[in-house]
Amino acid sequence: MPTDGLPSRVLLIDDDPVVLSGLATLLRKAGHTVAEAESGSAGLASFRENPPDIVLTDFTMPGLTGWDVARTVKAINPRVPVVYVTGAAHEIAPHQRAVVEAIIEKPRGLNTLHSVIRRLTGTSGDRSTVAPTLASA
Image (cartoon, rainbow, N blue to C red; front, side, top):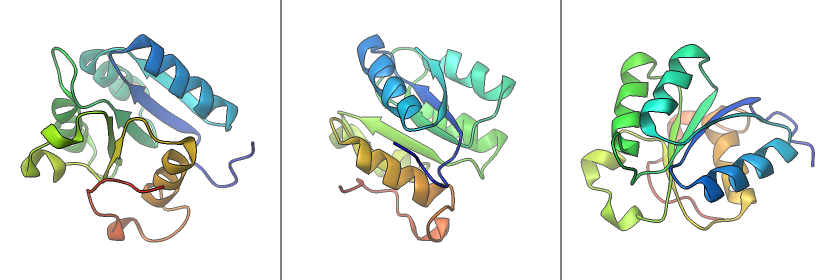
């Protein structure tokens, strides 16, 4: 499936290897280059080594959480969009929502993920209009 205009570099962070592998495979099939990280600290190391176009991170992870990742990414480069991809959206406090551009609740379809990536990387519409709320299909 071609991704006309979608970003080529996605950093995907999730402590569940099955989720990480599955999402990475789907994104690669759609034409993305995906860097995978199984922890927040590994994700930040990858971010520093090879900055992506967008960061997709689980929210609830041991050690560095998605919120820790988002805050650090924004401190390094506030222009890189960060999206929580999580099954725990109900646990995210308002101040934790304010750090990211969007939240996608697991499980969601790949189309939702592509739609959010397109909006946040400026390939369809104005990035400033994306609110840090749950993405819809």
